[in-house]
Image (cartoon, rainbow, N blue to C red; front, side):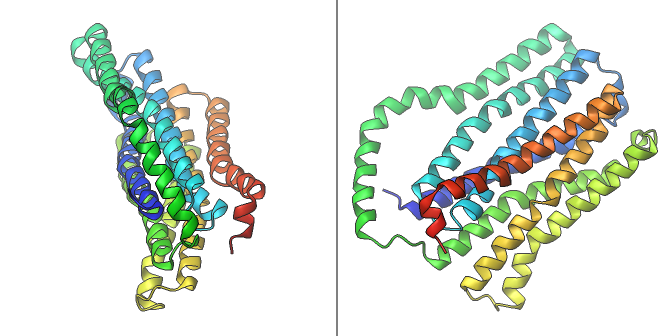
Length: 316
């Protein structure tokens, strides 16, 4: 059976699989609202695309929370609680992801074939995703439950006999993996933000929306710079050596990058929703709620969990 450190690493790698796809979809949603074809869509399709955007933003927030939980609650140490948290996050995020995917298929197909066929296509792909992401697992899980419990019991016995602290090389590997969870998606969003400024729809936005977009772009660029900094620090300062100092520095860079990132995402969410809804108060309130969700999940919840976790309080 896989060791705890390997299970944690695998769980983080699996979040990377979802993260890049989700943030690319977010970038496309941001951009589509400024495309000429968006205004030709039925009002219902426009609203559904905004709903898909909200769902994908929720997916992104949940996936990134694994890194903040590991850094803040566990301070880079492996634990069964961390593995369980990442597992629950993965379980939850696949549901809104599948719904958003179905919405996109409905809008894209319905534009060509009509709402009835579009609805059938959207529902079919959403159900297909739900089957392969949930249904198949529910069917197969009972047959594997007894074997998994046996292996978990053996692992717990071995863990009691082994040292509990995570090896330094594993902690460094995991903090870099957590940075890689966020970085590709942030880079993709940054590219979409640069491209958006060259679109005809961008020129038609109010000046305040243009300014909000530029600020969001700058914050996203800052987040990307901070996420890439550990690699430069490791090569230049540490000369590639694995040290506890580098692990701390990389953790600080990762957490620092997660401060401007939500503002950059929420800023463009405000721009897009303001254009679609033509309501500044609604767009502003929705952006603030999205910002509170990100900060509350990444920092508020994790700080609370750390204060309630005696083991985490003892980790140095």
